[in-house]
Length: 205
Length: 205
DNA sequence: TGTACATCAGTGAACGCGCGTTCACTGATGTAC
DNA sequence: TGTACATCAGTGAACGCGCGTTCACTGATGTAC
Image (cartoon, rainbow over all chains, first blue to last red; front, side, top):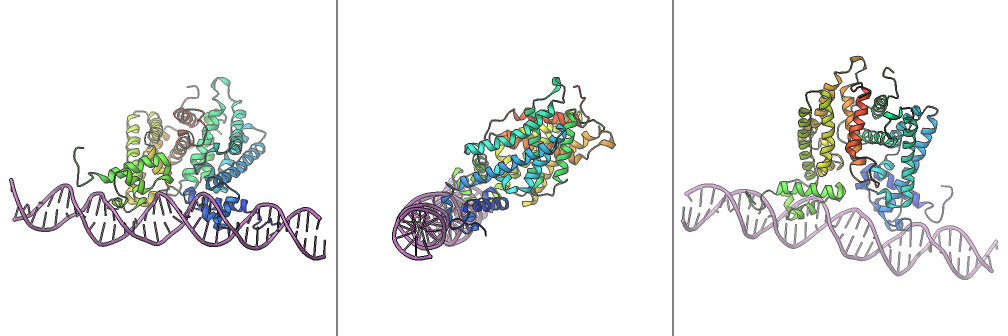
C-alpha cells in the first residue's frame, strides 16, 4: 500500500494502467472509459477529475508508450555500439521487443487512431522515438559510398515499415493462422538481407 | 435503374458497398450496421434478411476484398512474366495498388479484427491471395544457389510485412505527419534493396 | 494536543443517445389458372 | 386478359443495453491556529 494520497492514492496512473490492460485485451474498439474506471475500483465520473474524457485517457496511454519506446530505442542504440551496424540491428530488435513486451502501449500508439498531433507533448515524444531510428540509419549510411547512398530517412522508413509489418501480421495471432516463423527470426533475417542489399554485410557472411 | 428485383433490387450488395464506404471513412470502429442500412435507404431490420448480423456483413466485405486482391495479384504475377524477378516486383506493386485503390476492402481485411477463420469461404479466398505471393517467391528463389537459399515462405513473409508496413505507416496520413516519401517509391526501393541482398540484382545496377 | 475549517477526490443518480437485434405486420411482386 | 393467391423483402415499433458525460453532493484528508 505504502504512500496513498487523498482517497485512491494514484487514480490517474491506475486508470492509465487499466486502460492499457483493456486495450491489450479487447483492442482499441473494445476499450471503454466506464470499464477502465470500474477496473480501477472507481465510478466513471471520477475519471473526469484526471482526464478531459476518453480520448485524453488513450492519448496519455500512448504518450507513456512513446516515452518507454524512445528510452528503449536509445538504450539499444547506445548499447549496440561501437559498430554502427550492430547499433542499427539492436534498434531493430528493440522495436520488436517493445511491441511484444508492451502490447497495450503499442496498440495505443499505432492502432488506436490517436493522432500524434493531439497534444504537443505527444508530438514531441513521438518525434524523439523516431529520431533514434533515423540517427542510427544516418550513422550506418556513412559506410556506404556517397554515390550509391540512399537517404537516411528512407532507410529508417524501410526498417520501420518492415518492423511494423512483422508486428502486425506475425507478432500476434491476429489474422487467424499461426505465423510461419517466429517474428524475431523474421525481422532479424529480413533486416539482414536488407543490409546485405545495402552492401553493409559481406555476401558470404 | 435497369434490372430491379423485388423491392430494392440488390440490397445485399448495396449494404456491402455502404459498409465499405463507411469503413473507409470512419474506420472499422466507426462503422455501424444501422448507418449502413440508412445509407442504403433501408431500415436496420432489413439487413437481417441478408446477413446474420453486423459481423457477417463486415466479413462479406472482407471476403470480396480478398477476392479482388487475389485476382489482382494473380494478374500482376502473370503479366510480370517472363522473368521471375519482374513478376515478383509486379506483385509487390499490385499489393500497394490494391491497398490504395480499395481502402475500404483493405481495412476490412486487415484492420477490422475479422478472423479469417470466420467462415470457410473467407479462409479459402484469403489463402488463395497469399498463395500467389508465395508462389512468386518460390519461382524467384530458384535463381539462388541452394545452399544460401532462404525458404520461399520466409521471403514472401518479408515482402508481405514490408508492404503492409508501408501501407499502414505511409500509405495514409494516419499517424499525424506527412510521409517523407511517396509510398510507391518507398516500397519499390525497399524491395529493390532486399532483392539485391538476396543476390538477385547486380550490385551496380 | 485539540478543534475548526478548507479542500477537493470520488460518489451516485440521472441524462440523452445510438447501438444491435426481435417481431408481428404489410404490401409489392411473381405465378397459376 | 383477368382474377385469386402465395411469397417474402422490407417496415416500424419496441426492447434492453452500455456508453460518455453532467451535476450537486459528501466525507476523508490536510492545514491553521
